Length: 434
Image (cartoon, rainbow, N blue to C red; front, side, top):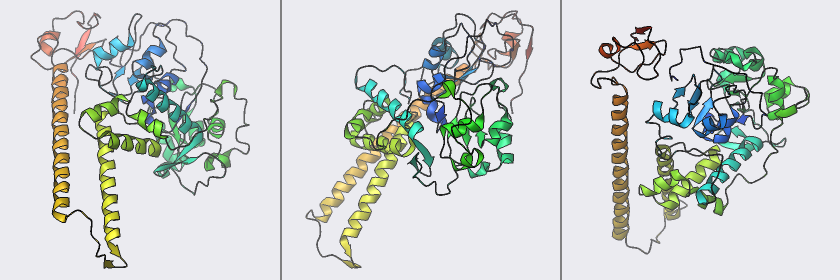
């Protein structure tokens, strides 16, 4: 099997029948961090000897082009699967630096949950995600309840795609195997995100994926996002345009957008939160920062660096708010109050200076660790680009027809079979980069 997308000849057997579709909505491309969402992209997967559940579990989602799949975390693409290939092993073999397969903490939410607090944290995030896509809709910097009494306020989520002429060019690389024409999707108000078959409405921001031949984009838009101002002008009777069959989504979950105290505590059991706490940040700040992000955007962090930024930003905003409150309490009607804090000013300054010094020390340690991690990744990438035979010269030529770029010109010249996949070598190409 090759991770290069050039060989159109792959052994196929009788396609497996279509599977039932369930939740097809999404609000952000980052939703592929959920294994359940990745699994739904395999609705039209037809390769019987590679299990779609294993692919989703290994971090992959279906690109709807040939049998190519992509990792939700390292964005590596693998395709042209052979019988006996194991998705997780192939992922690790081709993209060993991927944080997901190397065991580093990520925002992945598996479909199967353990009985411990970490499993309960995963279950919370999955249930919260289903609630957000079924019961809310995107709005500027927050979410609105998806109900008739909520006024959209004239907000357009993606004004750059307000006309069909601006949406149509986004479908330049639309997968032909989807079986739904770009023109019909454009007319329904959608633009193509460039990922798999995921499209979003320019007006309400709602997204759909998992398309099949015969789908009616306008009817699906009206069914899944019935309060979208644009689609309500297109369909006179939203939700009744055609029989839905297996397109019916799960019943909406009814719950508050705000997390409960118990749910806040569960966030600290997520591997990302644990890692950030291990790096020296206060658990209270980590919990509050991640909670604020989840309630505001509807999604968790994708990796450790994003979680660090979230917590730092939260602490900074909290300090700024505290300063404003302190200043306003000392000034009344433009006159400085005579009352002062009971702690002497020099002691306050000393405490503030100690806290600032501790924070700078923590940030320095975090940055040093990031530098070490980046140096390790850089060294791994350098090794990956060295010839696999002599291990001293950079890779230079692409073998044909397998398209492996694993050898220098000197070592590749005498090869009659590829050392990586054992395919007969019929020639070589020197790629032009730049």
